[in-house]
Image (cartoon, rainbow, N blue to C red; front, side, top):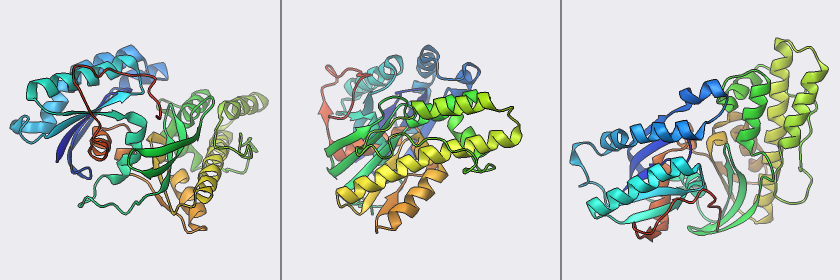
Length: 332
C-alpha cells in the first residue's frame, strides 16, 4: 500500500510516498529555516506563506509523471502545530483526496515522530517490537509514552514549561549562536568540558515522568552574568548545559522502561538527532538489557515519510469534508 504523506505542522513542508509503512519510495522536505534565521526563531506567518509556495511543486516532485496512480491513500498531520501551517497541509490533503477519490488518514504529528523508526526497512516487520517506551523530543514537545501496540499507548509525562528543543534554541540565542540553535549547541558542546559548570538537572528526582527546562535556561543566563565569557567558557557552558538536559532525559526514560518492564525504547523528534542523547541513552539502557531505537537523522526532523508510516499502521480514515486542523491536538 502506497501512502502519500503530507507534513506542514511547523516551518518544513514534508511530502513523501511510503510503501507498506516501512519502505520510503520518495521523500522531499522543503524548509523555510533560512527565512527565520535573522529573527532567531520561527515566524508563523512567514512559514505558512512559504508553504503555500512550495507544497504543490513538492507534491509534483514526489509523485512524478504518474500523478495519482501510485497513491492508494493520503495521510496528513492534522495537529498539533502552527495553525497557519497546519491549514496548508490539511486543506491540500482534503482537496487531493476528493479530486483523486482517495481515502484520507489523519495523523497525530507527535505520534508520527515515533514511526520514523519504522522507515527504511525492506519488509513490513521492524526489529522494534511492542511493548516499548517512546521518548518524543522536539522543539515544542518532550513526552514519554508507553506503547502497548499500534494506537494503544499511554502518555506518562511531558514538559511543564520549555520543551527540550525550545531550551536548546533559547540557550543558543543567549550564547550568540544562530538559529536553529540545537545543532549549534551540540557542535559547540563537543569542544567543551561538560563537567566545568554544575548546572541543575531539573526534576530528575521528582518521582514522575514530567520535565522542566525553563529553570536550567535561567541558570545558564545567571552564569553568563557572573563571568566575562571567552571562547573556552562558551564551549564549556554549551557542554555543561547539554549534559544536564541529556542526563535528565536518559534517567527518566530508562526508569520508565524499567517500571513498565520493556526491552525496547524508541526516540523521535528533531532533538533525537542529538548524538550525545542517542549514545548516552543507548549506553544507560544497555546496562538493563534494553535496546534503544532511533531514526536516521533525516527522519528525525519533520517529514512526510513519518506521517505516511504512522498512517499505514493506524488506518484512521476520516471524511475529507469534515477533517480540520487542530493546533492543540495532543495524545488521546
